[in-house]
Amino acid sequence: MSSCDCPECVSACKNDPGRLIPEDLPVIANFLNLTVEELIISHLVKIPCKQNEEVLSLAPAKIKGKRFIARPGTIAPSYYTKEKGRCIFLDETDLCTIHSVKPFECSAYMGCKHTFLGKPYKDKQVEDFFFNKWKKYKF
Image (cartoon, rainbow, N blue to C red; front, side, top):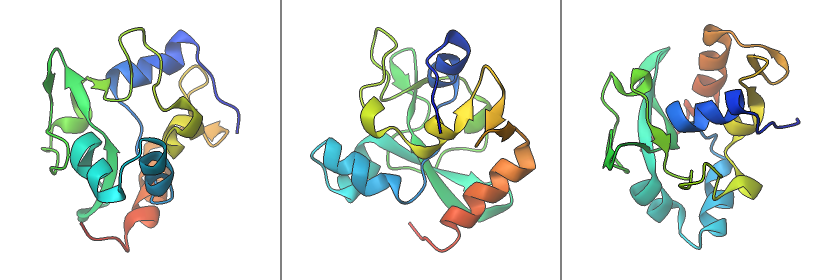
């Protein structure tokens, strides 16, 4: 997978950061010198999968102004995915502070081409992908 840092792709970081897959957790936690549990509590929110509201995925917390839209470590409210906010990992100069270990969706999505894993972005296929990644995990 190639990644892009053009304005359209960085726009996602400024408005709706990508979700993680389970394999991202230990990599990012290690990079930040945290345990996985500390990473979840301090940087991530739990988002219900649209396919099944009882299955949760994890995503970077979003900041709007100086406040979190949902506090890290909590289950995000239903409006969370539609609410615009900056990724907790994006610095004030719009650079990713964890770019070398960025979450899966940040690598898989290209906003300028509107693709996911190199294929045209389709909501249902993307939701199915994340549902299948997270369906066996309980938080």
